[in-house]
Image (tube, rainbow, N blue to C red; front, side, top):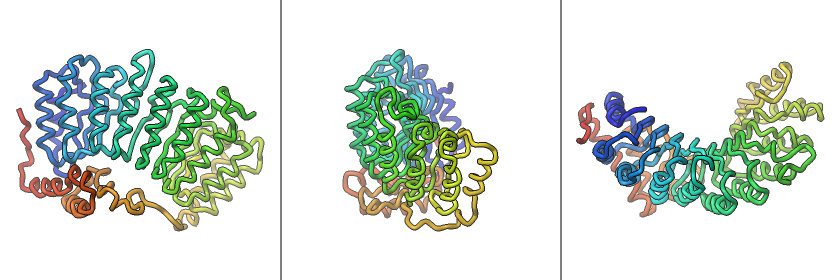
Length: 420
């Protein structure tokens, strides 16, 4: 683990004004004195160019005095320009009071990208209120990108799950959702169905990952799984997701879909082909060799579909599907066919160019999503675009502040002073 002093020293040595991310990964906050945390909070406030804070793998376990850590989160969440926060693998499930403070701040902040990956819910290590805090975070209306992989929400009680799913359904501006490895087979029937309908109704989703969600354990080839989920429901669920009009990336890998969708897999592949915004799909690890066994024509039809269509351009299906070497070569030849790749999409919807996006809240999402590539000219463009923002958001985004900071930084010393 690192100390705050070491983290700031590293940031100091690598500092340049095109890097708007402060890395505090691996810092052990449980061993830091209050004056060091206050110093860090003051430092964050003094850096107007910051757009991202990385707290992944930071340690908050063992902190009993919540006032010790509060200045840090107050500085992050009241900063006028920080929009991206990484809290992956912070063991927040083991210190729920700290997570409760974080969730309260996030709910009222302007954070647009949040990573809560691998803060696994586990009834042996943490209280059920963990999911309550995640639900509170979902009330943030500015969230556009959210990573909730490997939280295992199915271990919470039914009432909490229902509230969580209802809150997720309200996140209609969400564009990126990573929900992989969340063991959907742990959910009771009504809640699995409610979650499926919720995901299929997040109309602004561009990216959705349901990799490793163990849907193959829910349904058997005969049609009824251990919770009574039918093949038809899983099929309708996936087909509904493919109706999302802005979807560009879908990861359904490692769900053993071929194990129970044998009769419907061709229809599913046709639907994928018809989804003209889809640019990437991952179907690895779905036991499609079972489909090939029951429907020998499957592979030939699928190869022909791939060759005839430019959508999606990036297809992953060759790994962990039980195909022979010769079958993999057929698939790879079709996927990499130059004529197929040269076809132009009839209709694509870039992540940041959805109709009326520029006028809906005035935030240039590309500008905030790629902080390392920000330049003075990019900041100026973002400042110009923010003139059409709504009053509530434009006051917080303050793109002009970033542009001014970039201009000021060009003449500033390359060795910033840390506050003491």
